[in-house]
Each structure stands twice: as structure tokens, then as C-alpha cells.
Length: 506
Image (cartoon, rainbow, N blue to C red; front, side):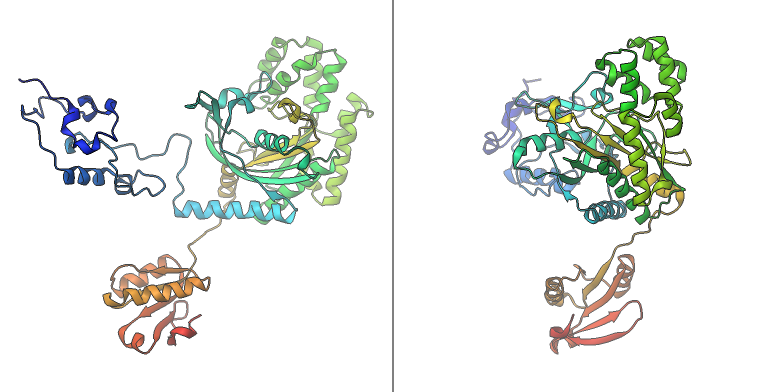
């Protein structure tokens, strides 16, 4: 068999400028010699053939493209039909597609997030999904450290997909500096990524609603945030019998550690261990606490405090003079004024796993106990200095989209959302497609939604289409009516039909 010619030569010379040499290996084409013996003659390639192959493989044709790129450039090497293998059509593990019915639900949820934020005077912000890896790596023992989707970019910079929004908020506040007018009341709805074990309501990619208040040292800020979440629950049909909030203060833990002269450096590690208290046996909790350097007496007292479920009981153990007790009492008093006392309860075991919380922390939970935490947050007064900024009093919460959908399913109150189209416009003759487009454009300019039938279809098909998209009116463009400057309009809910002049169509 004569030598196989360089694969570089089987492409049209005009393409050589655009294609990198390392693309031209025969192994790339997955052509096996026994099945496809190469001729000793070079195969003449017509540029039109290459263009056809490129079109056949282009993202817009095979459904794998993004951003609607319709470039005629060669999308990939010509691949023989028998060598093409089907790709896995499922999204990556832990992620989701949003077909129209799921997108309607997501839009409904986000609308309610935004509406509650508007009602409480918060302004919307957003940040890059891709951030510096260093932004998310803080104190030792933080749970988020091993859950990053991180990599090195082409500029040799360590970057990560954001696992949460609060560090990005802190970065932006530091960047803006003294130009900001305090207090800030900001909210964001952003996509987040965490590589972790998946459970019901927990995904590796999710959307999160955050509300944050910067510049208010008083407990009124935490009370406002919890009030906002309660308002959201009420708007979507969730009551205090379905959901509650466990409330605690990390200052309780700090007071215990100080009483045993335990280093502040252990604080974050102890918080991460306590955050597992409902996930692993209590003996394992004891072992982990001892392993980080806590003496047995401190472990015993800490576990005693963690079992406390009322403020009065906590006060008996710690005394009433501490800052933690005073702040918690104030929060419960404010809850009465806001009108959500029945929603909240004290629980000393709630500390939240993230290292940056410094004071009151809270967690929304499903009272039926079937789901993981619905939302959570607290005070983080010393976060900005972690990134080299000047600390400001701050608190906020994160609320994921996946768990609340599971809760709505569980309660049987997931909304039924259907498409809402005001008009469907159809030409009764192929020659009237342009006229139908004119009608559609006129209505769209008046702010009405229009589904324009783009092909010649029988009326039976058009009526089925109108029912599927929940159209309110059917507008038919026929020869006789169009010559008179009119269209036929049918109200689909009542069946009422009339002819209307084009300039009177509203």
C-alpha cells in the first residue's frame, strides 16, 4: 500500500489558513483502515462539498449550538456517516434544562422574588458567574472549600464558578468604597454552582435569591430580612404551619469557647462540626470536637447548650447579661411587631456552616421534616476585612430555587402555568402571508403579543395551535376581507366573530 498522503492536502487550500495543523490527524476522523481503505490517488474535494458538510455539521442545524451562531465557517471536520456517534442528550449531572413549561415556573418564582424585594425597598444587582477562586477560599474548615468548580484560565489565573453570592457582594462593596450611600438594601437572583452530593432539593447548579442589608448594626436588619421571606411564603401560599425559622446567635458559641479559654481560631472549625449535628451521630460530633482541640468539659457544656430550645432555658445556663441573649430577645420582640412570631423559634444548634457569620443566624425549615433547609442567613459584620476592606455591619440570606419547588409539590400547590398569547394571526391564502405579517406587526407595536402562523396550515391545525398556546383571539386574513381593508376576528372564549377594519383593530 502506498504511503498515506498528509491529511492536510485533502482540504481545499483556502481552508488551510483557518484550520490549525493539530486538527489534521487521521485519528480525528475515526476512520478505520479496513472499512475505509484510502486510494493511492488524492481525493479531489470540491469547495461546495466542504461547504455542504460544514452546513450539515453547523450548531444551528444539529441543535448543539449556542447563541444562534449562523456563521458559514467550517464547524468541524467532515465525518463519515457511519462514524458519527450520538451524544448524551441529558444535561450534566446536577444541572437542568428549562423547556417552556419549566421556564414559566422559573419566571413565576423569580417574579415573586423580585416583587417581595420591591415591596421592601431593595434594589437589584448582579455579579459575574465566574470569579477569582481566592474570593471563595477563606478560613480553614469552611465547607465550601471542597465544593468549588474551579480551574485555571488561559491567563494562568485561578477562577471558579460562584458557589454563592455573598462574597461577590462584598467584593463590589469594597470596590465602590466611599461612593456608596449607606445603608445598602440590595438583592440578587443568580446562578450558583457547587460540586456536592445531591439530595432532594439540592443540585450542583441552582439559582439563589439573596437579600442583603449593609450598614445597619441593629437587629432590626435581621428582623426585616425574615419578614421579607415570610412575605414571600404568604404570597405563594405557604403558611406558618408548613414552614418555620430556627433562630440562634453565634455569639452563644463564642461565649462558651471564651469561658474555657479556647482560641478564637477554633471558632470556624467548631461551627462547621456543629452544622452537621442533624446529619451524623452525636458520638461522631463529640469525636470531631475533641479532635480540633476542645476539652471534654467544654464539649459536654456545648452539647448541653445545643439541645436548648427556648431562650429562657438558655438564659438559665449562660445568664442574662450576655450580648447574644439581649440580641435574641430583641429579635423575638420585633417579630411580634412585624407579625410573624408564630413563624420563628429558638434553636441553639443552628450555627450555619459558612465561616463568615458573626451574630444572629437563621434557617427556614419544612415542619414536616421531609426537606433540607429551605433558606438561611445571618449577620456577617467582619466579612469585608477578609478581603482587605474596611468592615461594615451586614446581614443577609440566601434562598435556593430547587427546595421551594419541592415544597410546593409536596403541598400540592404548585401553580399551573400556561402560555398566555393575546392573538394568533393566520393568512387564509399563501399570497396573504405578507398581509398577515403587517397585521402582526401593527398589533405588536401596540404592545400585544402575537403568534404569527408562518406556514400555510389548515384551519383545524390553527385552532389546535390557538388552544395549545391559550390564545384569546384568532385573526384571519382572507382575500375578500383584506380587499376591503378588514380582517376577521374571532374571540376564542365565546366564539363571537366579526369583521374589523384594520385601522380599528386594537
